[in-house]
Amino acid sequence: MTEAVLTSPSAEHLEQAQTAINTMPDNVIDTTQFKSALVPMYCPELVPSLNYFVNQLGFRIDAIFPADAPATAIVSGYGLSLYLSVHVTQGVQTLHLLCTAPDLAAGGQRELLAPNGVKIRLAHVDPPMKSPTTRQALVLSTMDGDAEWSVGRAGLRYRDLLPDRHGGAFIASHIAILEGGPVPDYVHFHKVRFQMIFCRKGWVRVVYEGQGEPFILNAGDCVLQPPTIRHRVLESSAGAEVVEIGSPAEHITMADHDLPLPSAPLPPEHLFGGQRFTRHIKAEAAWTDWRLKGFEAQNTGIEAATDGLAAVRLVRVTGARPAVVQSHATEFCFYFVLSGSLTVTQGAASYTLNKDDSITIPGQMPYALAASPDLEMLEVMLPGSPEILLEDVN
Ligand SMILES: [Fe+2]
Image (cartoon, rainbow, N blue to C red):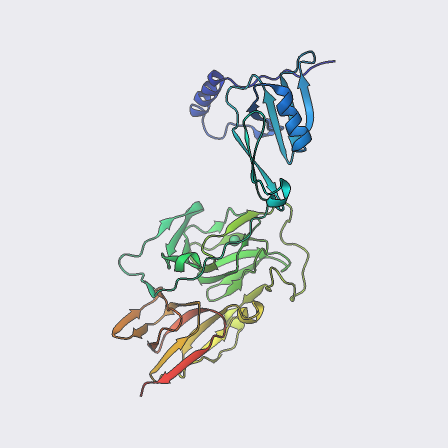
């Protein structure tokens, strides 16, 4: 019988390999040569560790050698191959095993110790979403002067509209795509409670699970991205801009390698995490009364699609606007000025917002709005229809 001859990389080998990598020009690695991957793990004695990985942890033996006095074994399981050997000099010290219910896997123990001293940590394969309680504040973000754009991946620029994140409960970003053309994205999804994308400028071509062929979001259009819907950004115009609001601020993004998009159509009432997908096309939507006189709004359908969790509206001026103090029982209220100007008065303080400025208004805080005749703004509110107190000032 022929035995596989495998040796563990020595420190010298690793150093040589590192030097070779450092001196290698870009793009010379031919990944078609790669067939599988082995993770080296040291064990002072093979048999106890091998038994533990096979009998206790459920790995299977793929190779063992030499036959007369085994010193090395390859075991595999859960998408991983381990090279267990007494000859390994630098091996992994910790292994994470992902479980559907980690507390049920080992009698409540979340960390196990293998005979070779390696720690086995049991973690969630599908970690639950963490939703911090909102800590609201009045946060003004202006475009003039000191607007900060940070450089993100693939030529994206990010402007954080809510640096304090309401205690981690919300994120609001103004994102600019500098270069037009194909976007290097892949099919992915987010574990979120709420997420919407509004196209501020230019256009973005996107595709969503079950929603037919790719489509273009033009300026003024928006989509509700219900929790876990698979999607992909395909292309954009140069200088396209979007406003993205999400909750919680930090959430997990996962790739889906198995679902190509576009995918088979799903009925409009299909629920993703309890919400329906919604696409709002500004050019086709009607304007109806807003809650204040002298304004009208386009409802994006997000309130119905989220069963009242959130509402997203485009608001503009129609006529005379009597002074009204309002307050609402919201956990989130956000205005982003698209054109014209908006003045928010709160007690003795007054804030004037121009194009691309935004503000968050804490729940229950009394405030008044004044607007220029050419004001148009985006409103995002949770819940969608809170209790609102309106008080005429005159
Ligand atoms: Fe996404």
